[in-house]
Picture 1: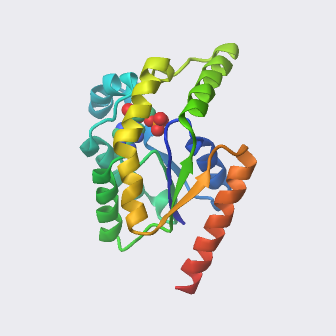
Picture 2 (picture 1 turned 60 degrees about the horizontal axis):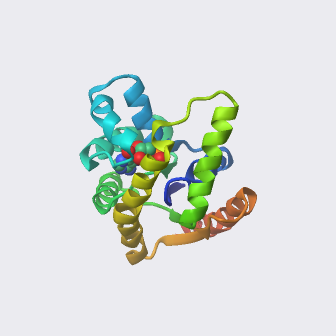
Length: 201
Ligand code: AMP
């Protein structure tokens, strides 16, 4: 199963991807996590990305596409993967199609989590509070200012990425405002349908 989960920051992509990873035994490939690891390891890509990420803007397409190309070619991604946070631009969506095409592969499903922005701001505020209460470190890009920039980037670039899949008629949308279990159930239903289609093909 090769999946893409789309949606603005805070929509629950990470939470749902983690569940899908358990259910389908495929890796969750989060470009945000990969970039944060690169920042921590102080790799050239990480060093170049840090300031961009901290202010909530998008890292250049070439950087992210390079990271994803390496990752989906890794042995543990042979049986499938969940892309969480990628593609975020039309250019990235095109690059993904090229990469998969070169490996004679295709996506089984692209699922977009729809949420309203006011709810996202409340969610992110709650995430910050919970992290602070448990003594954890708040992500530099979870500040209200950076989060606003992330939402703007999502509106300007990620939404056209969803249109790319809508035009190919493989985009499915799920109400991301529902409780976590209900969102997971809705995604499960869509994917069971996609799996049946793959088996018939
Ligand atoms: P996330 O953990 O998905 O919220 O991503 C955190 C930050 O990493 C984003 O605000 C961007 O700066 C960067 N990032 C993650 N994925 C991408 C991507 N596909 N394209 C560009 N920047 C990305």
